[in-house]
Amino acid sequence: MRKSTIIRKIQEAAVELGRVPRKKEFSYAAQAVEAFGSWNEALAAAGYPHHPKVTAETLKQKLDERVEELGRIPKAQEFQPHYQVALKRYGSWKNALKALGYGGFTPEEQLKQEVFAFYEKHKRTPKRGELEHGNAIAKCFGGGSFNRAMQALGLDPATANGLSNDDLIKKIQNKAEELGRIPIATDVEQFSTIMRRFGSWNNALKAAGFETWKKTHNSHIMISDQELLSDIQILILSKEGKRPLFREYAHGGLCLKRFGKWSHAVDKALEDPYHTMEAAKQIWAKRQRFSE
Image 1: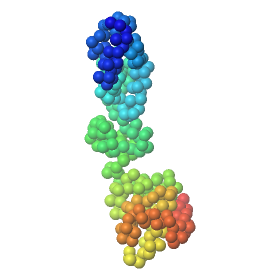
Image 2 (image 1 turned 135 degrees about the vertical axis):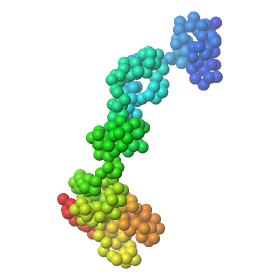
Image 3 (image 1 turned 180 degrees about the vertical axis):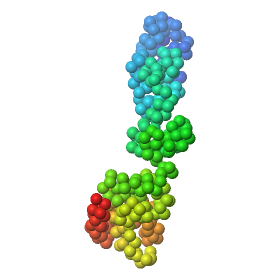
Image 4 (image 1 turned 90 degrees about the vertical axis):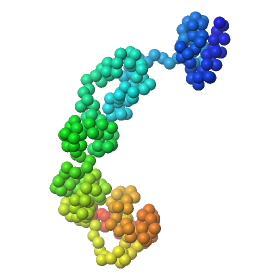
C-alpha cells in the first residue's frame, strides 16, 4: 500500500473517531509500520506527532502536583491519565508510590497531611465536614471526637464545643491583641458559640474586660436615622472599610424598616448624608485607644 494511501486512511480514521486512532484500531497498522518503520512515524507523517514517552521524572512531577492539589496522596483512580502508565511501569499502585517517593507514608500520616494541607491553604483549623476523611481523622486521633483530634494534632478546634467559658474569653482577648482593637463578633471563629454561652456579644466583651456597644435610647422609635447610620459607620471603620453584616448590628431590624434593605442602610451610611463620618472616626479611634 502506498504511503499516501496509508496517510489518507489514518486521517479518515481520526475524523471518524474524533481523535488519533490507536494502532490496534487501525485495520492497516501492519502496512503502516512496514511503510514508515513504526506506528509513531506513520502518525507523524499523517500530521499527528506522537507524544514523547512519559519519564519517571514526569510521573514524579505529576504526582507531586496531585498531592499538593488534594492535600494527600491520591488514590489510583485519582491519578488519571497517568495511572495506567504508572501501573504498567511499576506493576502496582503501591509499587509506583514507593518508586516515586511516597512509599513511606502510613495511613495516619496521610490523614495528618490532609489536615495540615487544609490549614496551610485556609490559615485556620478545618471542620470535620470540610475534609474528605474527617470521620477517619476523628477516629484515628481523637477516639471519634474531631475536636479532640485537632487538639491532639496541636490545633485549636474550629468549633468551641470542647472549650470552657474561660477558654472562649481568652480567645476574645487574644483576638483583640492580634487585631489591635476590640473584636466584633465575626472576628472570632467561635463567635456563634460565644454568643450562645454568654447571651450576646456585648456580654462576652464585658466578661473579657472590654468596652461594649452602648445603647443610649430606651426605644427603637427614639433612634434617629442619623444615629443608625453613624453606628453603621463605626462598624465599617471597625472592619477596616469592609461592609458589615446584618447580624453584626443590634438594630439591624430597625434598619430594614427604615431603609428597606440592610444593603441600602450600609450604602446610605457610606454616602454620609448627615456628615457624621468624622465623628464616627473619632469615636472609633477612642475605642481603639481603650483597647491598647
